[in-house]
Image (cartoon, rainbow, N blue to C red; front, top):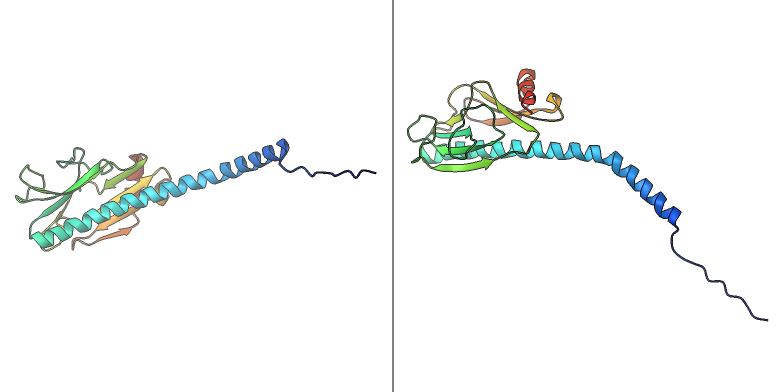
Length: 184
């Protein structure tokens, strides 16, 4: 009498594959919104850190060169725009003649270009630049530079530069956050 051997088949069925794809799709749809929030938070932090680095560079340059150094928003990477909007980028330059505007003979120290879309960076009304004196202090009044993205004013952040020239991170006032968020 012959013995029958049964071979067990291995593999997955079409139903198992479809079920796996459906579960994967559901997980992706639930995770995507939180991933978008993480990306926006990272972009906002990156822009804030970049501006903080430029402020520290400007202050250090003023101290080491014993000259006025200006940080200002720029749309063409060569001159100050004269605006309170910083999302197009900014420049740091040595201001030899003290006019707070870059002339062709004044050296550029740093250039930072376009920030991510969907993000607004606005300085205090009327504050279109930060000037560091040779002693490291900032001329004028305190300036707050507010950062806002599509998540709204509740999650806005800011860099505040005091008259001593020290920049620090903090929260903008409700008015400043609303103004920055309106620019998106």
